[in-house]
Image 1 (cartoon, rainbow, N blue to C red):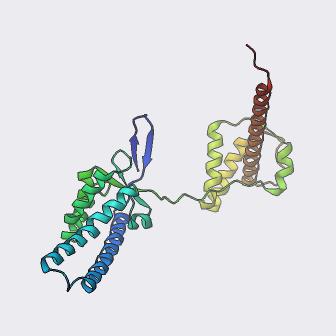
Image 2: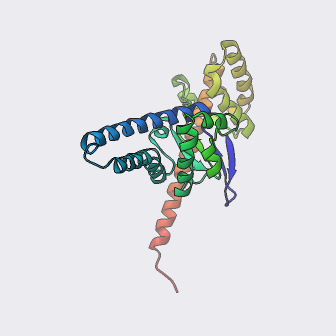
Image 3: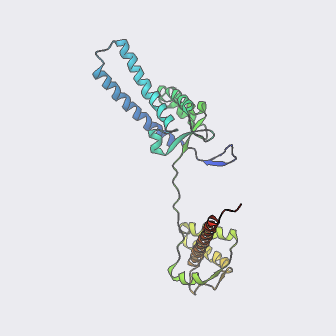
Length: 267
């Protein structure tokens, strides 16, 4: 993942596309382009091939090739700000080196370079160039100042802490003091990662954290409560209390705003 600092001093965390993702997206685009090109050439041959002058026919064939291999890709990439059919399938987008959207100039340079590094060399030039830089840039990207960004990133599944039913009554009546921020983070991290831990490590870590948390909770949970259930109950109850407190503050702010709005205007 790369960091980019914008002109407003905002740090953007961007993830360049992997070489494999770029190669697959390019393969999809090339296959689609050649299918379209083959179809247009067949259509041209059946409709106008025998009725036009040979020189004009060659010129028209060349125009079709240029249109399909350069014109259409450059136009699509410009209008979609860096997308193509292959990149859409792979969740990629072409962006400038500073993270901004590409324009016609960038797309045109990339399209012209693709003739050499993808079509004339069967992709070998693009392959060699992409293998030796950290953003998998091909020659066209180096010339245009662009690279492929992984736009669609799989988010880790979120696991919301649930209140153990048997501890709900106790938690609602318990007095819970303010935890140190470091302790709150360690408890949250443990509850998120607990399913991936081995049973002995999970139990030991839960008992260790429960001993620390118990100093801020009164009364203590019912006898026989598992340490992890205790942590889940405390975390869920503190979350619900924080949400209720913020809701009350928002309602109070709205009431004050409505009262001020009803006051007559005074010179």
